[in-house]
Image (spheres, rainbow, N blue to C red):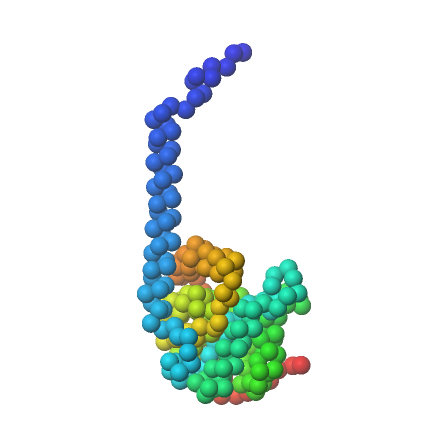
Length: 234
C-alpha cells in the first residue's frame, strides 16, 4: 500500500491556526504571571522593611522555614541562617516578644522548626519565647496557622525580601495585618537568578492560584496560647 505523503502534510491554514492557538496560550500564561507579580508587589511593598527601626512593635514574629542545609549536601544553607539572624535581631531589639518558627516536619529525621529553635537559642533567644509550628509545609500553611493556631492577626514575617513579599500578600488576602522584615539575601549571581526566577515564574503565580481556589492549611490543631511558655520535649 502506497502512502500519499502529500495528504498527510499539514496545510498552511492548519499550521497557522496551531501557531495562533499556541500564541494565545502563551499570552494568557504571561499575563497571569504578570498579574500575580503586580498584585503581590502592590500589596506588600509598603509593608516590607530592611531595618528593624522601621518596623512597628508586635506581639510576635513568624519565621518562615527552609532546610538548614543546601539540598543534597551538608553545606549550611545561608538563607536559613540569615533568617534566624534577622529573627534574633528583631527579638533582641524589643520589637517582638515571641517568635513562631514554622516549617516542615513531615518526615522522620527532618525537622525545620526544631533546627530553627536550636539556632535561636544559640543566638540568645530564651527557649520559652520560641513556639514551634510543625505543620508549616508551605508559606500559605504558615500564615493561616499563625492565626488559626497561635491567634495572631497582627505580626511580623521574617524571610528574605522576595519571599516575605509573597507571605505578606497571602496574609493580607486572609485579612491579617502583617509586616515583613527582610533577612539578608544571597548576593551571588547564581542564587539570585535561580531564586528570583523561581519566585517570579512559579511561586507567585501559585500563590495567586491558591487564593483563587480558596485553599486552606493542610492541618489544623489545638490552639497555642503565646502568653504561656511552650513545653518542649528535649
